Image (cartoon, rainbow, N blue to C red; front, top):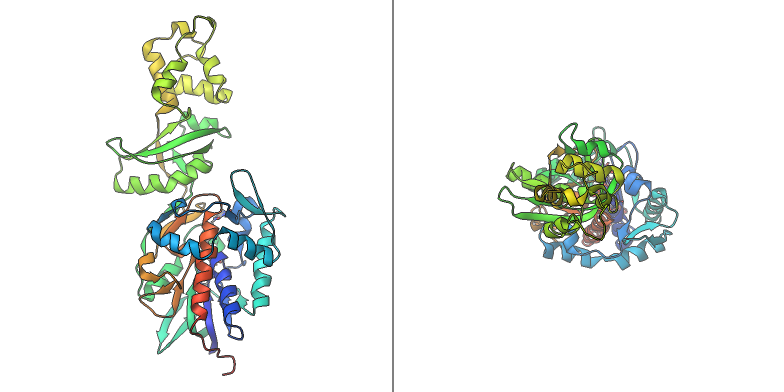
Length: 419
Ligand SMILES: Cc1cc2nc3c(=O)[nH]c(=O)nc-3n(C[C@H](O)[C@H](O)[C@H](O)COP(=O)(O)OP(=O)(O)OC[C@H]3O[C@@H](n4cnc5c(N)ncnc54)[C@H](O)[C@@H]3O)c2cc1C
């Protein structure tokens, strides 16, 4: 049976960072990251539309959901954005800031990020072994036994970095949760996050595919209480809603809807309140020829403008403002500021960018990400009950938690390479 000092299970973003950190901290020790995917780093390669949004220039605990904010803050503080930028610069990846604060490699190629991480792992002395899907993990005395279908490895410490369930064809198929359970951990119910939302089939909004608009989306309870709101860009698609605001609100809608099937999603495309919206449609004696279409087309793409009038408000867009009834005005204001969206579900883990739920942070010592249940087992990345907004936050979580886990696993390791 092969022996290693530290076995990292999963060589994605968090696992590679953990392996590099462990090998740097415990030179001479045997650190190996094992990954079951047919292709290493597949998720890094598809991230950010193939450009890999490595982090964001401002990352706060409020950008995350799941665990409590103090716990998240503790991990983020240990390896902040400056440290991330410096880390990547040191391994040969210069990052650039784009409008909105997202940081990408200057090459605009996710491949640059993956190659640099793999080179850094090799330089640090960490091994990365593909084609090794861990099927069982158990303790034998003071060591771990990590087994794939055809090989078994003994390890002094283990870092579990198997990710979540999103895009399972990349290798992150959720089996890591079983490994965590086998080590005595609980797993909070998982569900897709950063996932496009489905609308009732054939709904008029689906005919607006390709149109993008700034919008506020809010999740409301059955009684109308606002549970969460987001304002960003919304993109209509043939199946429903996508774009940053739909992705960011998705986990909140899914969580609310799970608890209360009457929870809804409301759209405001005006960025103003109902009374202001109503005001827009009051006839101005100085502009006698003004029409509903004129008001709407000045603010929204033409097809959206006409659909808001006709489909959402039931008002002919050609209607002159002077002939608009009070009811018509109110229907238009309603369409612009509080339009209920008939969401039927989400597109699922096949396309979700992250997984909400997972192993609770309460079960870890956050200074080292070590399990409170199984000593010398460390966990990091998306397997944990933390999911971030769109914009580089999920990778920042992977880098920070991966570094803590790798460093933590390296403490207490007595190199076995002489044995
Ligand atoms: C389409 C898409 C685009 C994204 N874009 C961005 C972005 O631009 N910026 C951003 O911040 N986030 C982005 N994300 C999210 C980000 O990719 C993840 O949050 C991040 O990769 C999580 O890192 P991780 O290492 O915890 O898990 P993963 O990257 O999922 O890695 C887990 C690894 O473990 C391996 N594994 C799983 N089970 C086993 C097993 N039993 N045995 C051995 N190996 C196993 C898998 O093969 C995988 O390689 C995107 C996600 C998707 C799906």
